[in-house]
Image 1: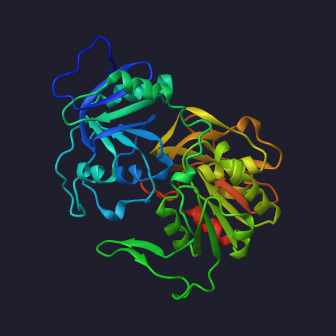
Image 2 (image 1 turned 90 degrees about the vertical axis):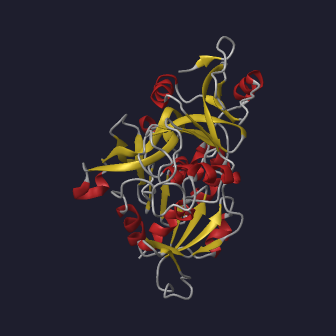
Length: 398
Protein backbone atom coordinates (compact mmCIF):
# COMPACT_ATOMS: atom_id res chain seq x y z
CA UNK A 1 0.00 0.00 0.00
CA UNK A 2 2.25 2.80 1.25
CA UNK A 3 5.68 2.68 -0.39
CA UNK A 4 8.86 4.32 0.80
CA UNK A 5 9.75 7.24 -1.45
CA UNK A 6 13.47 6.48 -1.11
CA UNK A 7 13.45 2.79 -1.97
CA UNK A 8 10.62 2.24 -4.42
CA UNK A 9 10.52 3.57 -7.94
CA UNK A 10 7.47 5.40 -9.23
CA UNK A 11 5.14 2.91 -10.98
CA UNK A 12 4.57 3.34 -14.70
CA UNK A 13 1.56 5.54 -15.43
CA UNK A 14 1.39 7.08 -11.94
CA UNK A 15 0.22 10.68 -12.24
CA UNK A 16 -0.91 11.17 -8.65
CA UNK A 17 0.50 10.50 -5.22
CA UNK A 18 -0.13 10.86 -1.51
CA UNK A 19 3.02 11.73 0.44
CA UNK A 20 3.12 11.28 4.21
CA UNK A 21 5.20 13.24 6.70
CA UNK A 22 7.39 10.15 7.30
CA UNK A 23 8.27 9.96 3.59
CA UNK A 24 6.02 7.02 2.67
CA UNK A 25 4.17 7.37 -0.62
CA UNK A 26 0.94 5.98 -2.07
CA UNK A 27 0.85 6.12 -5.85
CA UNK A 28 -2.21 6.43 -8.07
CA UNK A 29 -3.70 8.11 -11.11
CA UNK A 30 -4.49 11.79 -10.75
CA UNK A 31 -7.69 13.46 -11.93
CA UNK A 32 -9.45 16.74 -11.32
CA UNK A 33 -7.17 19.73 -10.70
CA UNK A 34 -3.41 19.58 -11.19
CA UNK A 35 -1.10 20.72 -8.42
CA UNK A 36 -0.68 19.83 -4.78
CA UNK A 37 -2.51 20.39 -1.50
CA UNK A 38 -1.69 19.68 2.13
CA UNK A 39 -4.25 18.45 4.64
CA UNK A 40 -5.31 15.82 7.14
CA UNK A 41 -6.18 12.45 5.62
CA UNK A 42 -9.51 11.02 6.77
CA UNK A 43 -11.96 8.45 5.46
CA UNK A 44 -15.70 8.63 4.75
CA UNK A 45 -17.92 5.54 4.62
CA UNK A 46 -20.94 7.04 2.83
CA UNK A 47 -22.16 5.18 -0.26
CA UNK A 48 -23.85 8.23 -1.80
CA UNK A 49 -23.47 11.99 -1.75
CA UNK A 50 -19.81 12.39 -2.70
CA UNK A 51 -20.48 15.84 -4.12
CA UNK A 52 -22.13 17.01 -0.90
CA UNK A 53 -19.16 15.60 1.03
CA UNK A 54 -16.65 17.45 -1.12
CA UNK A 55 -18.52 20.77 -0.69
CA UNK A 56 -19.08 20.44 3.07
CA UNK A 57 -17.05 23.30 4.64
CA UNK A 58 -16.39 21.08 7.66
CA UNK A 59 -13.88 19.24 5.43
CA UNK A 60 -11.71 22.34 4.90
CA UNK A 61 -8.08 21.33 5.35
CA UNK A 62 -8.81 17.65 4.78
CA UNK A 63 -8.28 14.96 2.14
CA UNK A 64 -11.17 12.49 1.97
CA UNK A 65 -10.56 8.80 1.30
CA UNK A 66 -13.87 7.30 0.16
CA UNK A 67 -14.32 3.70 1.29
CA UNK A 68 -17.09 3.09 -1.26
CA UNK A 69 -15.30 2.13 -4.50
CA UNK A 70 -17.64 3.64 -7.12
CA UNK A 71 -17.25 7.38 -6.72
CA UNK A 72 -18.20 9.69 -9.59
CA UNK A 73 -20.58 7.36 -11.38
CA UNK A 74 -23.55 9.75 -11.15
CA UNK A 75 -21.57 12.79 -12.27
CA UNK A 76 -22.01 16.23 -10.76
CA UNK A 77 -24.68 18.92 -10.80
CA UNK A 78 -25.27 22.37 -9.32
CA UNK A 79 -28.11 21.22 -7.04
CA UNK A 80 -25.90 18.93 -4.97
CA UNK A 81 -23.39 21.62 -4.01
CA UNK A 82 -23.73 22.28 -0.28
CA UNK A 83 -21.76 25.52 -0.02
CA UNK A 84 -19.54 27.99 -1.79
CA UNK A 85 -16.85 27.41 0.81
CA UNK A 86 -13.58 25.60 0.37
CA UNK A 87 -14.62 22.12 1.49
CA UNK A 88 -12.18 19.24 1.12
CA UNK A 89 -8.90 19.93 -0.67
CA UNK A 90 -8.82 16.52 -2.36
CA UNK A 91 -10.23 13.01 -2.54
CA UNK A 92 -8.88 9.48 -2.88
CA UNK A 93 -10.89 6.72 -4.60
CA UNK A 94 -10.46 3.08 -5.58
CA UNK A 95 -11.84 2.91 -9.12
CA UNK A 96 -11.04 5.23 -12.00
CA UNK A 97 -13.75 7.80 -12.70
CA UNK A 98 -16.07 6.51 -15.42
CA UNK A 99 -18.55 8.41 -17.56
CA UNK A 100 -21.57 9.44 -15.54
CA UNK A 101 -24.85 7.53 -15.74
CA UNK A 102 -27.58 9.66 -14.17
CA UNK A 103 -30.28 11.90 -15.64
CA UNK A 104 -29.48 14.70 -13.17
CA UNK A 105 -25.80 14.91 -14.17
CA UNK A 106 -24.60 18.19 -15.67
CA UNK A 107 -20.87 17.39 -15.74
CA UNK A 108 -18.39 14.59 -15.15
CA UNK A 109 -17.15 14.41 -11.57
CA UNK A 110 -13.52 14.75 -12.70
CA UNK A 111 -14.32 17.90 -14.71
CA UNK A 112 -16.27 19.35 -11.80
CA UNK A 113 -13.34 18.68 -9.42
CA UNK A 114 -11.02 20.46 -11.83
CA UNK A 115 -13.32 23.50 -11.93
CA UNK A 116 -13.40 23.51 -8.12
CA UNK A 117 -9.60 23.31 -7.87
CA UNK A 118 -9.72 20.01 -5.99
CA UNK A 119 -7.29 17.13 -6.56
CA UNK A 120 -8.42 13.54 -7.04
CA UNK A 121 -6.37 10.33 -7.00
CA UNK A 122 -7.74 6.96 -8.17
CA UNK A 123 -6.31 3.45 -8.32
CA UNK A 124 -5.56 3.42 -4.59
CA UNK A 125 -6.17 0.53 -2.19
CA UNK A 126 -8.59 2.56 -0.09
CA UNK A 127 -9.23 -0.34 2.30
CA UNK A 128 -5.56 -0.45 3.26
CA UNK A 129 -5.46 3.33 3.53
CA UNK A 130 -8.51 3.28 5.80
CA UNK A 131 -6.92 0.64 8.04
CA UNK A 132 -3.81 2.80 8.30
CA UNK A 133 -5.89 5.77 9.50
CA UNK A 134 -7.85 3.59 11.94
CA UNK A 135 -4.68 2.15 13.49
CA UNK A 136 -2.38 5.17 13.41
CA UNK A 137 -4.78 8.11 13.51
CA UNK A 138 -5.42 10.77 10.90
CA UNK A 139 -2.05 11.76 9.36
CA UNK A 140 -0.95 14.95 7.65
CA UNK A 141 -0.32 14.38 3.94
CA UNK A 142 0.20 16.14 0.64
CA UNK A 143 -1.85 15.03 -2.35
CA UNK A 144 -0.36 15.85 -5.74
CA UNK A 145 -1.44 15.45 -9.35
CA UNK A 146 0.77 16.06 -12.37
CA UNK A 147 -0.41 14.81 -15.80
CA UNK A 148 3.23 14.17 -16.72
CA UNK A 149 3.96 12.28 -13.51
CA UNK A 150 6.74 14.59 -12.32
CA UNK A 151 6.98 14.96 -8.54
CA UNK A 152 9.55 16.32 -6.11
CA UNK A 153 8.89 13.77 -3.38
CA UNK A 154 11.35 15.28 -0.91
CA UNK A 155 9.68 18.69 -1.17
CA UNK A 156 6.23 17.12 -0.77
CA UNK A 157 7.39 15.23 2.31
CA UNK A 158 8.76 18.40 3.87
CA UNK A 159 5.47 20.17 3.19
CA UNK A 160 3.49 17.37 4.88
CA UNK A 161 5.88 17.29 7.84
CA UNK A 162 5.84 21.07 8.19
CA UNK A 163 2.06 21.49 8.27
CA UNK A 164 0.81 22.03 11.79
CA UNK A 165 -2.42 20.05 11.41
CA UNK A 166 -5.96 20.89 12.50
CA UNK A 167 -5.38 21.04 16.26
CA UNK A 168 -5.30 24.70 17.30
CA UNK A 169 -6.33 25.80 13.79
CA UNK A 170 -9.22 28.20 13.13
CA UNK A 171 -10.40 27.57 9.55
CA UNK A 172 -13.77 29.28 9.92
CA UNK A 173 -12.63 32.63 8.42
CA UNK A 174 -11.98 30.79 5.14
CA UNK A 175 -15.51 29.37 4.84
CA UNK A 176 -17.93 31.77 6.55
CA UNK A 177 -20.12 34.30 4.76
CA UNK A 178 -18.83 37.84 4.41
CA UNK A 179 -22.17 39.60 5.04
CA UNK A 180 -25.61 38.88 6.56
CA UNK A 181 -28.05 37.18 4.23
CA UNK A 182 -31.76 36.53 4.29
CA UNK A 183 -32.12 32.84 3.52
CA UNK A 184 -34.72 32.19 0.85
CA UNK A 185 -34.22 28.52 0.01
CA UNK A 186 -36.85 25.84 0.49
CA UNK A 187 -37.44 22.17 -0.20
CA UNK A 188 -36.16 20.35 -3.27
CA UNK A 189 -38.56 19.05 -5.91
CA UNK A 190 -37.58 16.78 -8.80
CA UNK A 191 -37.53 18.80 -12.00
CA UNK A 192 -37.89 22.13 -10.20
CA UNK A 193 -34.88 22.14 -7.90
CA UNK A 194 -34.87 24.12 -4.66
CA UNK A 195 -37.68 26.56 -3.99
CA UNK A 196 -36.67 30.20 -3.68
CA UNK A 197 -38.82 32.73 -1.86
CA UNK A 198 -38.37 35.75 0.40
CA UNK A 199 -39.91 35.31 3.83
CA UNK A 200 -40.32 39.09 3.96
CA UNK A 201 -42.76 38.99 1.05
CA UNK A 202 -44.04 35.39 1.03
CA UNK A 203 -46.06 35.14 4.23
CA UNK A 204 -43.15 34.75 6.62
CA UNK A 205 -43.91 37.64 8.94
CA UNK A 206 -45.53 35.47 11.60
CA UNK A 207 -42.92 32.71 11.54
CA UNK A 208 -40.29 32.51 14.31
CA UNK A 209 -37.05 34.23 13.34
CA UNK A 210 -33.84 32.21 13.55
CA UNK A 211 -30.47 33.91 13.25
CA UNK A 212 -27.98 31.31 12.04
CA UNK A 213 -24.29 31.93 12.73
CA UNK A 214 -22.30 30.58 9.79
CA UNK A 215 -19.13 28.82 10.94
CA UNK A 216 -19.03 26.90 7.65
CA UNK A 217 -22.62 25.79 7.23
CA UNK A 218 -24.15 23.44 4.69
CA UNK A 219 -27.09 24.93 2.81
CA UNK A 220 -29.40 22.04 3.67
CA UNK A 221 -29.30 23.13 7.30
CA UNK A 222 -31.09 26.35 6.40
CA UNK A 223 -33.54 24.52 4.15
CA UNK A 224 -34.45 22.24 7.06
CA UNK A 225 -34.98 25.19 9.39
CA UNK A 226 -37.33 26.69 6.79
CA UNK A 227 -39.11 23.36 6.34
CA UNK A 228 -39.57 23.14 10.12
CA UNK A 229 -41.37 26.49 10.06
CA UNK A 230 -38.76 29.21 10.65
CA UNK A 231 -37.57 32.24 8.76
CA UNK A 232 -33.79 32.44 8.69
CA UNK A 233 -31.15 35.17 8.59
CA UNK A 234 -27.58 33.91 8.15
CA UNK A 235 -24.75 36.00 9.63
CA UNK A 236 -20.93 35.73 9.46
CA UNK A 237 -19.02 33.92 12.17
CA UNK A 238 -17.62 37.06 13.83
CA UNK A 239 -20.96 38.87 14.11
CA UNK A 240 -21.07 40.59 17.48
CA UNK A 241 -23.59 39.86 20.21
CA UNK A 242 -25.08 43.33 19.83
CA UNK A 243 -25.54 42.88 16.08
CA UNK A 244 -27.21 39.51 16.59
CA UNK A 245 -29.56 40.95 19.21
CA UNK A 246 -30.38 43.86 16.88
CA UNK A 247 -31.88 41.33 14.45
CA UNK A 248 -34.43 40.40 17.17
CA UNK A 249 -33.99 36.63 16.95
CA UNK A 250 -36.47 34.23 18.50
CA UNK A 251 -33.63 31.72 18.48
CA UNK A 252 -30.03 31.38 17.33
CA UNK A 253 -28.58 28.46 15.39
CA UNK A 254 -24.86 27.56 15.67
CA UNK A 255 -23.69 25.85 12.49
CA UNK A 256 -21.17 23.18 11.64
CA UNK A 257 -17.69 24.13 10.46
CA UNK A 258 -14.04 23.07 10.19
CA UNK A 259 -11.04 23.19 12.48
CA UNK A 260 -10.49 23.16 16.23
CA UNK A 261 -13.50 24.35 18.29
CA UNK A 262 -11.19 25.77 20.95
CA UNK A 263 -9.50 27.99 18.35
CA UNK A 264 -12.75 29.28 16.84
CA UNK A 265 -14.18 29.51 20.34
CA UNK A 266 -11.74 32.28 21.25
CA UNK A 267 -14.18 34.73 19.62
CA UNK A 268 -17.34 32.61 19.25
CA UNK A 269 -17.74 31.37 22.83
CA UNK A 270 -18.15 34.85 24.43
CA UNK A 271 -21.01 35.54 22.01
CA UNK A 272 -22.65 32.19 22.82
CA UNK A 273 -22.27 32.87 26.55
CA UNK A 274 -24.01 36.19 26.05
CA UNK A 275 -26.90 34.46 24.28
CA UNK A 276 -27.17 31.89 27.08
CA UNK A 277 -27.24 34.64 29.71
CA UNK A 278 -30.18 36.23 27.88
CA UNK A 279 -32.05 32.91 27.71
CA UNK A 280 -32.25 32.97 23.92
CA UNK A 281 -32.98 29.47 22.56
CA UNK A 282 -29.93 27.86 20.96
CA UNK A 283 -29.38 24.85 18.70
CA UNK A 284 -25.88 23.81 17.60
CA UNK A 285 -24.57 21.05 15.37
CA UNK A 286 -21.04 19.74 14.96
CA UNK A 287 -18.66 22.68 15.55
CA UNK A 288 -21.60 24.74 16.87
CA UNK A 289 -22.45 21.91 19.28
CA UNK A 290 -18.86 21.77 20.50
CA UNK A 291 -18.69 25.52 21.09
CA UNK A 292 -22.03 25.47 22.90
CA UNK A 293 -20.39 22.93 25.21
CA UNK A 294 -17.35 25.15 25.66
CA UNK A 295 -19.60 28.09 26.52
CA UNK A 296 -21.25 25.95 29.23
CA UNK A 297 -17.91 24.89 30.73
CA UNK A 298 -17.22 21.62 28.93
CA UNK A 299 -13.94 20.75 27.20
CA UNK A 300 -13.17 19.39 23.74
CA UNK A 301 -10.40 17.13 22.46
CA UNK A 302 -9.12 15.84 19.14
CA UNK A 303 -10.21 12.30 18.31
CA UNK A 304 -7.93 9.50 17.17
CA UNK A 305 -9.57 9.13 13.76
CA UNK A 306 -12.86 11.03 13.95
CA UNK A 307 -16.29 10.02 12.66
CA UNK A 308 -17.17 10.53 9.01
CA UNK A 309 -19.93 8.73 7.16
CA UNK A 310 -23.67 8.34 6.76
CA UNK A 311 -24.23 5.22 8.87
CA UNK A 312 -23.31 6.12 12.46
CA UNK A 313 -25.67 4.80 15.17
CA UNK A 314 -26.45 7.25 17.97
CA UNK A 315 -28.59 6.51 21.04
CA UNK A 316 -30.75 9.02 22.89
CA UNK A 317 -29.87 8.83 26.58
CA UNK A 318 -30.92 12.15 28.15
CA UNK A 319 -33.88 12.22 30.51
CA UNK A 320 -35.35 15.17 28.66
CA UNK A 321 -36.17 13.02 25.63
CA UNK A 322 -39.09 11.36 27.43
CA UNK A 323 -40.52 8.25 25.78
CA UNK A 324 -37.92 8.48 23.01
CA UNK A 325 -35.03 7.85 25.43
CA UNK A 326 -33.17 4.72 24.36
CA UNK A 327 -34.10 4.96 20.69
CA UNK A 328 -31.32 4.77 18.13
CA UNK A 329 -30.87 7.10 15.17
CA UNK A 330 -28.70 6.33 12.16
CA UNK A 331 -26.86 9.56 11.50
CA UNK A 332 -24.50 11.38 9.18
CA UNK A 333 -21.24 12.53 10.79
CA UNK A 334 -18.17 14.55 9.97
CA UNK A 335 -16.00 15.55 12.90
CA UNK A 336 -12.50 15.09 14.24
CA UNK A 337 -13.06 16.77 17.62
CA UNK A 338 -15.57 15.93 20.34
CA UNK A 339 -16.83 17.11 23.72
CA UNK A 340 -15.16 15.17 26.54
CA UNK A 341 -18.13 13.39 28.13
CA UNK A 342 -15.97 12.13 31.00
CA UNK A 343 -15.69 15.69 32.30
CA UNK A 344 -19.07 17.30 31.70
CA UNK A 345 -19.67 20.18 34.11
CA UNK A 346 -22.73 20.51 36.31
CA UNK A 347 -25.65 21.81 34.29
CA UNK A 348 -24.64 20.07 31.05
CA UNK A 349 -26.66 16.91 30.38
CA UNK A 350 -25.54 14.30 27.87
CA UNK A 351 -28.45 13.51 25.56
CA UNK A 352 -26.91 11.35 22.81
CA UNK A 353 -23.95 8.96 22.60
CA UNK A 354 -22.23 7.12 19.78
CA UNK A 355 -22.83 3.37 19.79
CA UNK A 356 -19.51 2.91 17.99
CA UNK A 357 -17.25 4.27 20.72
CA UNK A 358 -19.39 5.89 23.42
CA UNK A 359 -18.28 9.41 22.55
CA UNK A 360 -20.56 12.37 23.14
CA UNK A 361 -23.10 13.12 20.41
CA UNK A 362 -25.49 15.49 22.14
CA UNK A 363 -25.93 17.85 25.10
CA UNK A 364 -28.63 19.99 26.67
CA UNK A 365 -28.03 22.93 29.01
CA UNK A 366 -30.05 22.64 32.22
CA UNK A 367 -32.53 25.46 32.78
CA UNK A 368 -32.06 26.77 29.25
CA UNK A 369 -33.67 26.18 25.88
CA UNK A 370 -30.29 25.20 24.49
CA UNK A 371 -29.10 21.93 23.00
CA UNK A 372 -26.67 20.58 20.43
CA UNK A 373 -25.79 17.41 18.55
CA UNK A 374 -22.45 16.27 17.22
CA UNK A 375 -23.84 14.74 14.04
CA UNK A 376 -25.37 16.33 10.92
CA UNK A 377 -29.18 16.09 11.13
CA UNK A 378 -29.63 17.93 7.81
CA UNK A 379 -28.89 14.61 6.06
CA UNK A 380 -27.11 15.75 2.94
CA UNK A 381 -25.94 13.11 2.39
CA UNK A 382 -27.29 10.69 4.92
CA UNK A 383 -30.39 9.22 6.57
CA UNK A 384 -33.26 11.46 7.64
CA UNK A 385 -33.81 10.04 11.14
CA UNK A 386 -32.88 13.31 12.83
CA UNK A 387 -35.09 15.94 11.17
CA UNK A 388 -37.10 16.03 14.40
CA UNK A 389 -34.32 18.14 15.92
CA UNK A 390 -35.16 21.07 13.65
CA UNK A 391 -38.83 20.72 14.57
CA UNK A 392 -37.91 20.52 18.28
CA UNK A 393 -35.90 23.74 18.00
CA UNK A 394 -38.58 25.69 16.11
CA UNK A 395 -41.22 24.51 18.60
CA UNK A 396 -39.09 26.07 21.36
CA UNK A 397 -39.46 29.47 19.70
CA UNK A 398 -43.24 29.67 19.78
